[in-house]
Length: 275
Image (cartoon, rainbow, N blue to C red):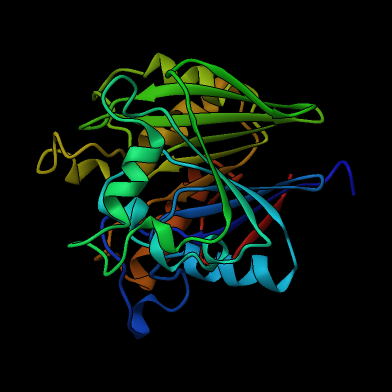
């Protein structure tokens, strides 16, 4: 299906993976989003959810994958050594990053993480064909014909990258690990959301929690929906759930969000959304 544009959430949690009965519905894996554009397979971030994504990729005999990083805080890279695709010689994995532009290359970042003392062995154990692509924030990427990916710097400690994907006339905006300024609409987030078919946004906190967590680099569903409405986005996924947020609490948050914006939903692990 050359016009296929599909999102699958393999990890929707922020900060640290969680488990237990109170997290069954929405899941406990940290950030990993799979995007299928026709025959192309893209992954965004390598949180703990990438382990299951990797198993699915091997099961489907997918030979070529592109992995894009928003940034390299632990919750977004912790699953990479458990991403089985990098250990199979039949697989080609291209890894992209731009959040450390001018400070560290994508290859150096991965080599540091997959090495002692953080991991038992170094990257030499990886048998896949691995390619590394560095880019500058605000650069437009075109990894495949017809696929346009605009990159944006996000307000997050240490920096982060947001992605706006356009494929066959449809738009997906990935905007997480971003902190907003109360009372102000972030022009970057607004530009990314403009007329998007789906926005995935950092909804770690409620507005009443932001005072305590100022400077932590995250946002709220209330602010995200305000932006989505202004940008005329069609659907809005609450993402990067706080690790302490239980299913009951997330369900209440989802209901509150939907009462404000009918296209809103709280993303959950293994959920599939067609654009």
